[in-house]
Image (cartoon, rainbow, N blue to C red; front, side, top):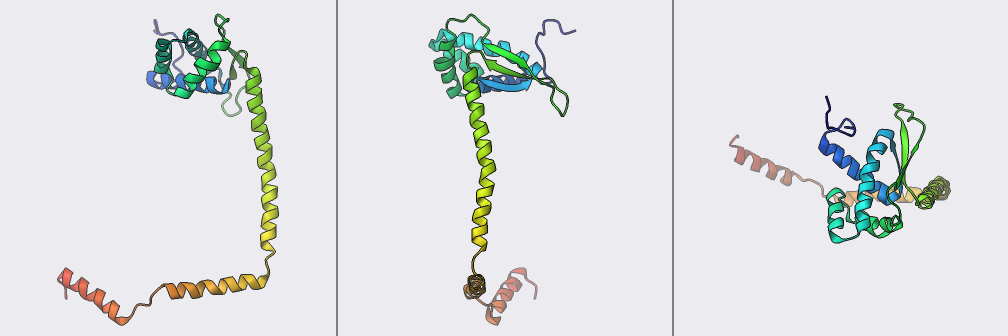
Length: 195
């Protein structure tokens, strides 16, 4: 029986579960909206809301308390200076869970967890990602044009550059003579004691 063991184990050890929730909370505070499984989202909600409630207090002890759970100082700073003031008049309910279609690979139920009141911030970031993706698609076409220009070099220049390379390599490497070969053999026979 699991008496007094509330919450989901998420098939993890207690330390792994704590680390998972801390990482999810940090990503939520940084990005304002994350996509994860429904079970993780339901576990994250009270965890993140307690941190926001502590951050609303705003004093040093509250900041140190939050730093016990979140390892990234920049995220804690964002939580205290940007997120907590926005929720000053709100008594809880800082996050929202939106259910999505199941994941294609393993049919796991998915959900979006977002901070209430930051919907516009999340959509602006997503639009930026879409612009980057479209820019990446247009870059290969530009690279192909540049590659086509390089291939149009005259054949004479290519032959001349190929002929110069072996000559330079031959000058750089010294030839082994019979005296250098004998010197190396003599050393090995003396040190080994074999004749």
